[in-house]
Image 1 (tube, rainbow, N blue to C red):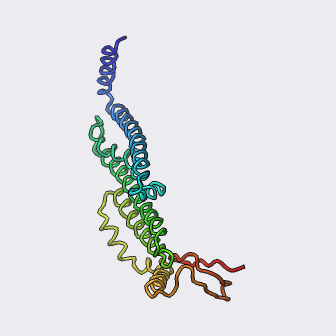
Image 2 (cartoon, rainbow, N blue to C red; image 1 turned 120 degrees about the vertical axis):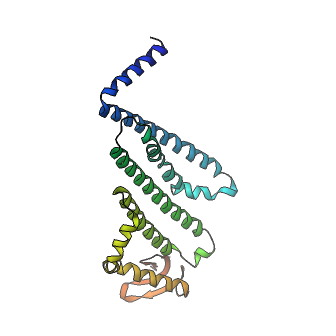
Image 3 (tube, rainbow, N blue to C red; image 1 turned 30 degrees about the vertical axis):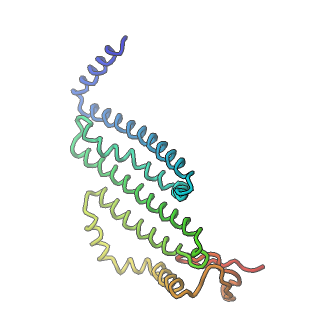
Length: 236
């Protein structure tokens, strides 16, 4: 059997599926899913390989921090969901309800990986900052942790709004009504952030300072300042 005859047989089989719309749509979506996964693999390989080559140049050494924190890996993971979003309209006999539902799920997945990529980017920026002279005396880990917390909260709101096909402003208005509960839940976090800002802005405590607090068993050098804690390495 030559290729032309095989192609004609495939066309006949595909045409016969017109009598079974649900099966036709299911097979079409399955093909789209396979193509999306394959393109995701290809995109991840090309992106990571290109970044690895560029990172060998001294001027672009910072790309290695982004690669090690999987920033580009997370971005590449968006490829399958993006392909599904734009390819849904090519699937035959797929109902509008199915297109809306699958499209919203794919969009939510894309947003999830975008949020994870932004979180990884913050980690990479923290690693880059850690190699500077300022990092020896001023820690920004608390600010990065707060930024990630805000990022995840807003990301979760947008993802939920996408899944239920509603405006994120609707959920935000609901959160406004629950502000008292939110403040109660995140009271310790907010107090920790205020304390961290005061410590940093007033230059009250730096990495490398020696502190002694017998009531908590701390007697040594400050090695890290985060949003919630100050890590002290006790002297032997």
